[in-house]
Amino acid sequence: MKVEALAIPDVKLVTPAKFGDARGFFSETWQQERFAEAGIPGPFIQDNHALSTQRGVLRGLHLQVPPSAQGKLVRVVRGAIWDVAVDVRHGSPSFGKWVAAELSAENWQQLWVPVGFLHGYCTLTEVTEVIYKVSGPYDRAAERGVIWDDRDLALPWPVPPGGALLSDKDTVLPRLADCPAWFTV
Image (cartoon, rainbow, N blue to C red; front, side, top):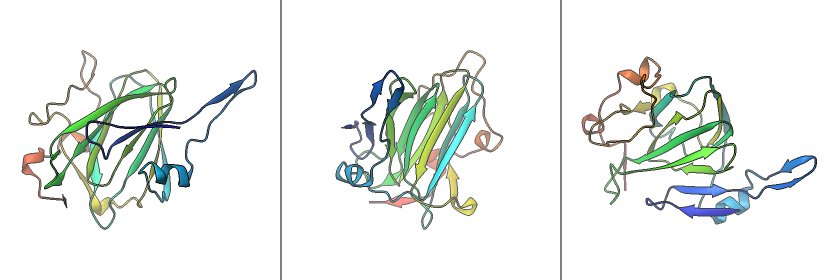
């Protein structure tokens, strides 16, 4: 397993080992002890699976606030995404900064998005399946978000010429500057 800290070191890019032969492959995509040693502690209590059937589907930017905050370990099993983590921990030297990685079924990489970060992604292929582990339960009352095209974040989303495909709730989220301090360090 290869683990790389990104420009915001709390966010990590993980490439699990993949062992292949004529039958296919085998890969340990989560192993609690090894991941904890790499700074990805878990425990994870839920797995989520999302299917997007078009290129340009944009999901985010989302998080949950305490006591239901979630860390996420994200991977792609079909297709590809541009995956983003935005630091929203007030007092952090990287507050308001973001990192991104392309995750795909082909590159077999995973992104660790810790508590205190907004998370979002844009699909790069027509059919994309994303599976992610979360460290806290889903709690509708704890859901928060920031508008995907917040001009202060200036995220270079790889949306197709027709624009991003969004859920209704993702079209009305506030800018980060208009949000309270959800997390502090």
